[in-house]
Length: 115
Image (cartoon, rainbow, N blue to C red; front, side, top):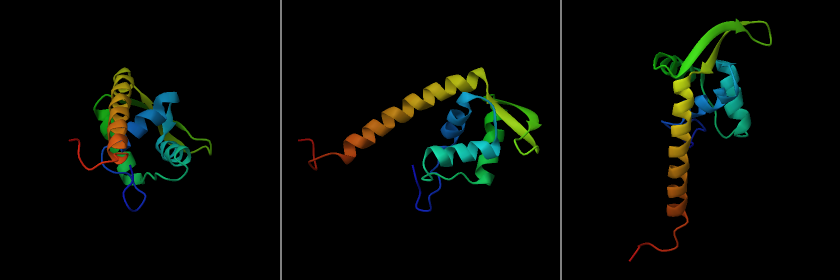
């Protein structure tokens, strides 16, 4: 979901982070790049909220982390889904799919009332 400046609305960042990490460990910048690339630039993840969310998800046991080196040989913290993170991703995806279907039905409504 987009806000008017192309940023994320509340509640979407966590599920996008979990999905980005579902294929294996990534550092924070790679998570932001993945979101931007996969959404063809429709969603942008700013650094501040991204790293706040990564730290919160790790603190809540949904991610683990390990220091390593990025492709350009810079030291970077790599995040990976924990078992609880994988379970949370499944629950979040299911919830978002139900939400998207419900909103889609409302937006496609042909009449103003159910009567």
